Length: 285
Figure 1 (cartoon, helix red, strand yellow):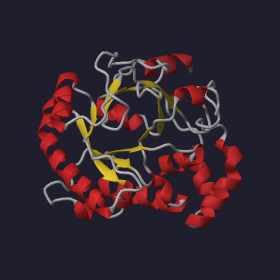
Figure 2 (tube, helix red, strand yellow):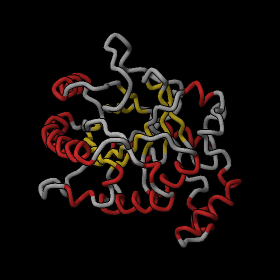
Figure 3 (cartoon, rainbow, N blue to C red):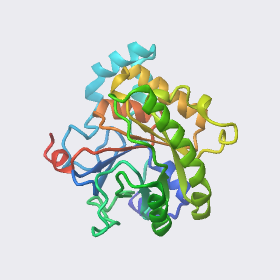
Figure 4 (cartoon, rainbow, N blue to C red):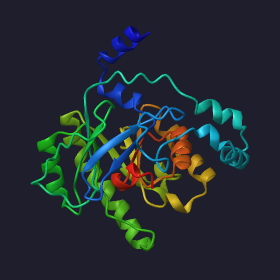
């Protein structure tokens, strides 16, 4: 059995297969914005025991009562969800690192090491680079230099306190920027994620121009997650997953509890990119 696993560890996969094999994953980021590590789970089997229960999926079976409440909301049985969250056949055969380039991280500091390797060197890792309030031209110039595997197209920062006018402007600008970046991403063989404000996730395709439909590599969900019930979040992500197809990448920028992360992973989220400080996670807070 050990020999078989060692053989799988040496298997070479394409980057598309790598992304597929990573679901579900959880990403951590320090207060300074530099990526420090990723926790990879089989949901019931925690692969990094030193991380506190606030982020780890520690024995989700013990949270059956919460799953029961959620199952009641959605009209599904607990057994149906429990079967989904039992350990899956993840052997983690991939050794290469992937690079995620995202606009919503802390202040970009060129003098810092851009390719910070992280603390969990045995897992499949995204190396996250930092960019904050950088003009789109600079953003594109930097990604051309670094050539990341996955790029989140920029979007104007929108909070729950922003008015509808700003939200609408952000969506229009995001659409134009995405169209401008498509060619650059294709030349680099990078996956380009379209930024979506979470409130617009359900009617997302109604906002897209016809020429973009069916061409998306994936989406990155921003903002508004906490305003929805757990069942609504599940339905929203499930609908988006069904619309995009199983090969598309869906990420979200959010601080999520273990239960929320588990439910959204079941719904089709591929990764969580968060500002949750690694120091607090390691302390179990």
